[in-house]
Image 1 (cartoon, rainbow, N blue to C red):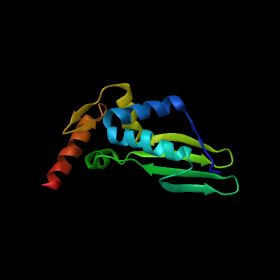
Image 2: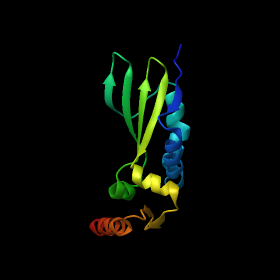
Image 3: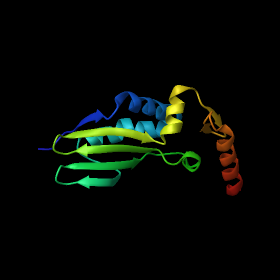
Image 4: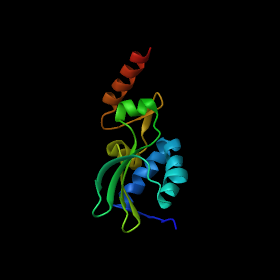
Amino acid sequence: MKKSYIIEYLNENEFRKKERAVKKYNMLAYKKLIFEFYPDFREGIFNGVIKSKNTSEGITKYELKLPTDIMFSKVYEDLILHYTVYENQNIVMLDTITPEDILTEGHQKELTTYKGIPISKSHAEKDMFKINLLNMLEK
């Protein structure tokens, strides 16, 4: 018989805020989470890169790269879901989604976009400079 896993949260409130920011700024990544990755987790299918493993206690930490716009990745880094699997308890613990700073800020206030990329209000000039530089390098 196949084991089924329960999804829980390290800090549900904080995680949901980041998840909503992903929904707002990257619908493809959000749809993958909701319709593909979460159902896989419940069935015991764990995607991503194993970051640490404790076989004696049955605890494995994963990092799962979410589909991200190339420019977003270059400006902020990839969207990554961090989660831990507790095999003995059949629990998948959703830890966080990174990059946390832009996702947290995106949840708190509406981010403006520049050339299709959300930019941080706290360091907008730096973000716009990076976007312009990357656009120039691509030409």
